[in-house]
Amino acid sequence: GGIPPYGPVDWTEETAGNTPDDRRGLCSMGPFTLEPDGFHKIDIAFITARGDSTISSVELLKTYIDSVKALYYLDPDHFGYTWLGTDENTLNKSKLNIYPNPATLIIHVEVSGKAEYMIYDIYGKLITNGNLSGIKNKSIDISNLDKGIYLLRIINNNTIISNKFIKN
Image (cartoon, rainbow, N blue to C red):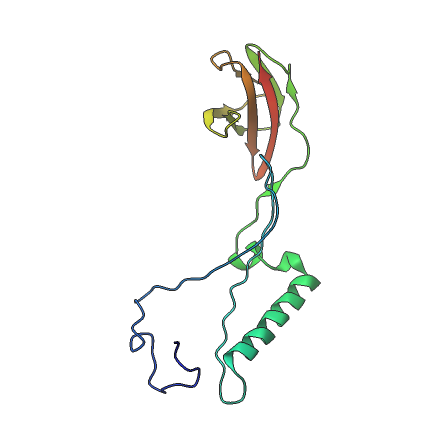
């Protein structure tokens, strides 16, 4: 029941009765499992095409999709944030050293420079946060936390490192 691709020449978004500024897209991806504290880089391309008397919109769209796929496979890093003009935050694969672990009153971490920390419970709820400054070995008071397993996330410049710790 749609409008023929080579329908009336006076067709516009308004004459079609479309709501102004209401453009929607649908995307499907997967399957994949995002584990707690996991990271997946996902690049999405929304492609449009308008055919003419020599090629249909669908055929032109298929050509554009093949072209984008080919360019992506040649250089995947070219896509994504580089086109937005912003730097992508990188996930540091190194482990965050927390000691003692398990702990009762205080945990110590090794981070250089100033950093921000967040402590999450096992359900992903933010329990507390703060800033770390001073020397390399930094301490965080956990005496007010209930016994359990927690995730400590440190943000230092554009680097995010995380690790679990146990509160006795």
